[in-house]
Amino acid sequence: MVDTPVILTIVSVCVGFVLFVTAASGARGRWRRGVVIALFAAAICFLTVVPLTVALTAGI
Image (cartoon, rainbow, N blue to C red; front, side, top):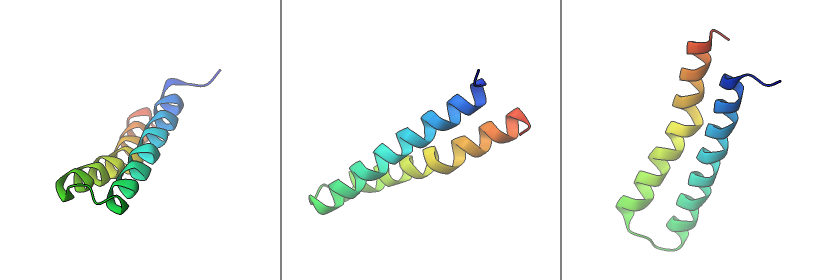
């Protein structure tokens, strides 16, 4: 079976990808600048910070 850190990393990357695509769509759709920047920042956190933290905590 798959361990919890692996599942957390996969879910985090999937959420980050969805946020990234939403932010890109918002940038093309002329959404408010603050919303797009917040979405990009959240996407970067979900794509990098969360997986790194999970990996370092799990000792992988």
